[in-house]
Length: 348
Ligand code: NAP
Ligand code: ZN
Ligand code: ZN
Image (cartoon, rainbow, N blue to C red):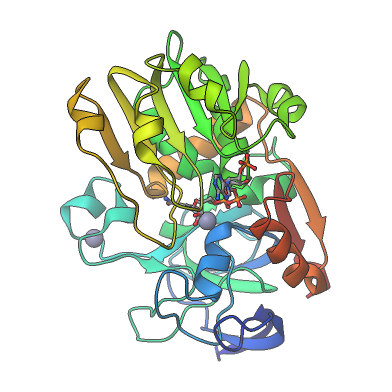
């Protein structure tokens, strides 16, 4: 079988608008599945990378790591999937499979570096291209099963926004009796609210304004505060067990840490382009934890998808044709998204 050329949307150079192009996909190997992509979510990480906000990128860059589609072909050694299956791909398409983290199902923290779905080089040294495309070839071990109960369009964002919030909420035991705050009601944040609520936690949204309050409460939040109002920080001081920040810009961490109870934890999944500063007394007083968390492992991603199906959770989406990707990027940058843009890949 030969390399196939498929249609895609790519940023030709850093910061350039995305445009229609074609990219190569490798032949379907022994353990590969060929996926006919139906929907691809737009994550803020796509923008950070296409604009080199996190450092040098590989161009042309086809972003997209919230992929949902249908298996169109399987390699001879594939055992987990068959043609016609509903599948997803998240932020990684490979890892070393040998280090302690890989063996423990924490492939996202692979000691030898996992292979990103895009903006990375695979084991053959070829660039990877993401989900803003019609097809992708992925090893079955890095492919997820999308349960029947979830539409492919609302499932796509679960592959990054869903798992990135599920993983810290599960790890830090969000559940009944726990007061959990989600900072930032965007793509990740709105899934964080839904998932924390489904886990049984008491959920507070900390948003820049009260503009999205009605939505936040509908999504499952019990309380909603504007961080632009200084009274918020007085009122909530020392009341929270867990804070998950999904904010894409640097935050005044000391103020947020003051909201935690003794032994509370603040987890940062938002990945701003600039460093943040911290007064260590903010964690010394109250034995507080400040941590980060990156996506989730393959096993945990499947667990998250099954959890979402069981609880009837999907993303709140605005489906767009591919020629509106650049406009969507601007809207994400101005926090004008309710709550995830999803590209209909039939329009690529
Ligand atoms: P998003 O849809 O743009 O949501 C971010 C939210 O943060 C916005 O909706 C806004 O919420 C809030 N926000 C934005 N600018 C702010 C500012 N200057 N001050 C305070 N709040 C601000 O982005 P996303 O796709 O959810 O991604 C969020 C971040 O997580 C990005 O940095 C992304 O790269 C990162 N990420 C990390 C991982 C990981 O593995 N750790 C995975 C995926 C994404 P309000 O309007 O409610 O204030
Ligand atoms: Zn993402
Ligand atoms: Zn590894």
